[in-house]
Image 1 (cartoon, rainbow, N blue to C red):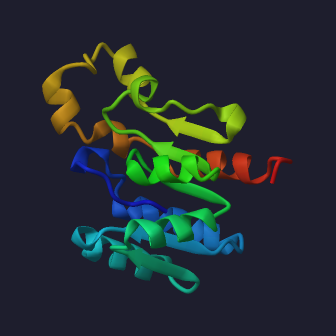
Image 2: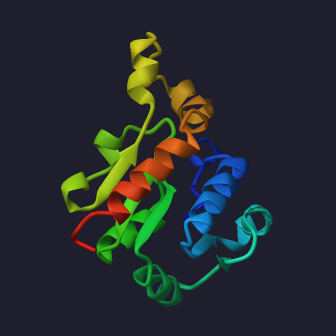
Length: 164
């Protein structure tokens, strides 16, 4: 689980990471939580909240980070550099988008094992200008509206694919 991002509006809430991690652990998946030193408190709370079987990887250099990400069956994370590393290493990815548009920032296809989850279309359907600078810089609504069930469903879809 890649819990970090460059901005707060791109970070899924801790309680949702914990719930997702617990559900994955219940299904007998080992859960790795990746974060930077700056995200130490969040990473520790999430790892502890998930419980037994979850492991925290914090502040790794690029070589170690790449080594551990390359061992994953799937990378689930916020829209961040980590998911690009995972994709470059051939790992399947589920990426959670806040106010950024996946059309612009998700150059990967589901056919190749990459799913983007975004709620921007729903906000646009409500008449909200998702290109508005204030919305893109301040709104937590897009990332917060992504459900644990949506992420789990996307992850299971990729994990259950015949291509491994």
